[in-house]
Length: 138
Image (cartoon, rainbow, N blue to C red; front, side):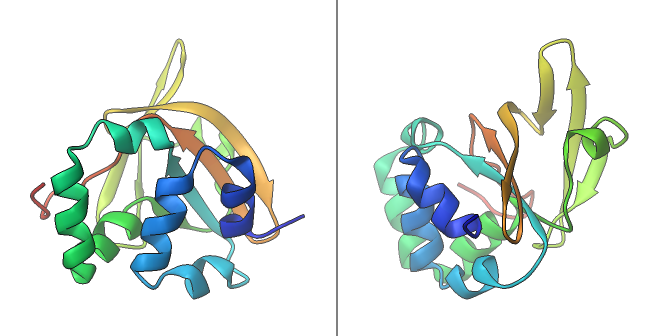
């Protein structure tokens, strides 16, 4: 099994996510033993955000780190755990809302497309949107 970063890179649908994780200097954290839970936006999710917005994030690394760590939870949080939660604290320090719907789960306004992709150092849940912490403007 590979770590979170390599698993995301190998999947092929998280090119933007892997690129911004690298740009933000978060590779070491997401390759460390963890465990971590990552709500991973797909390339399609990033495509919904204007290119100039993503470019501005890349020029503001502290902001980019805040946005990316808002997608990460400490610990191994799988579907069984998500059912019991209505919110969770992120590595960034903010809180994400977790909603159990007839179709699965939502994290804030993003739908969880796939759950429980296991890695050496945690778990990935695929989401269809990029989560923005409350204190960060787009």
